[in-house]
Length: 98
Image 1: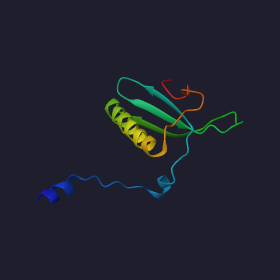
Image 2: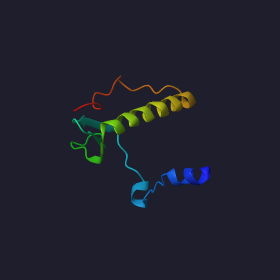
Image 3: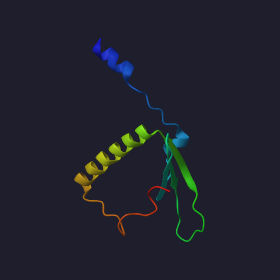
Image 4: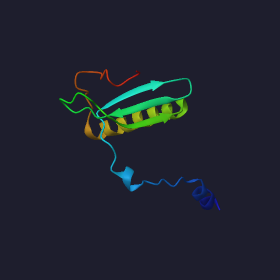
């Protein structure tokens, strides 16, 4: 019975083929209001005057904080396995609040 209840509580994730390839982003801009965080993921190609937003994600403040915790945990695990990630030129000023 416990296994049955556990299966009922599992979320089945669907990854559609058009989403499965993902989008490459090397720049992010984050803004927020009282009820949401807005994250624009951008691809800035060298020498190109424009940089398109490849994806926009809107989250509640609670979900944004959960994402922060998940990223922090995964970065720690990555660095434990592969070594410290050293950002080039220090903190990236393009990633942060806009």
